[in-house]
Length: 293
Image 1 (cartoon, rainbow, N blue to C red):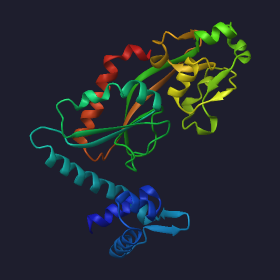
Image 2 (image 1 turned 180 degrees about the horizontal axis):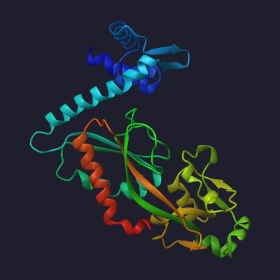
Image 3 (image 1 turned 135 degrees about the vertical axis):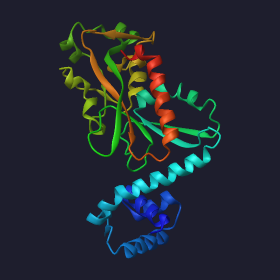
Image 4 (image 1 turned 135 degrees about the horizontal axis):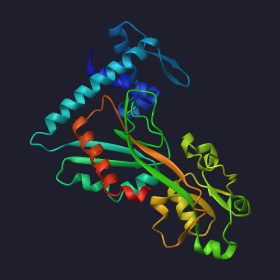
């Protein structure tokens, strides 16, 4: 069995389309289709059902997928070891993170993990979405829920708090709510409901608040900026809002807590580099754990 053909199989399985796999691998569509045909002929099994909307794994393809991922991980690990002669790490590690944690906390600090590692590249992808580690969308992911499916390794990173905040200028014009019921008389800022990618982001519901947002923003960082500009009252992360002189905490009895998890795949492609970055992220958080409370 040719490893190049297995790479084709993995790319199609992860993208769901031959055309998308071709783009991912920088090959043309015909080459990808031909190599898939060759692999299926070698195995004597159909690996995908090819439909107009994409490719769906067959039972044989589903059985092959974890084995192909293990082969990929072993080969990439061997390449990483060969590149890391002399004790230096090499390669690229991509970290997927929620936009708030990724932009406000990791982005100003993550570069420290490059010290002494001139052959290592870090990619930080701070966006409000879930990442698939099995599809190699990231090597590490910070998640807001502990994954319960897939061959993933999850470690608790930190528990963080959120509360109600408003700009001092907004409160000067609209007054300060005396209790939770009074929030209905204020302009509220929250998530775009149909873009919420995790149940744990329903902060208001879990806090027992009747929260009908007038201004919906899918980014936690965007919500902080909108609140700071006087746009209304929002439920903000303490580690982003607490230190800002232009923001005031409201109704401190309303406290919401959540947990960030640090997640990797069992068959990570570059284990030494991924382990270095994972340990480094934990150290960065532990050094400033108090800001999350």
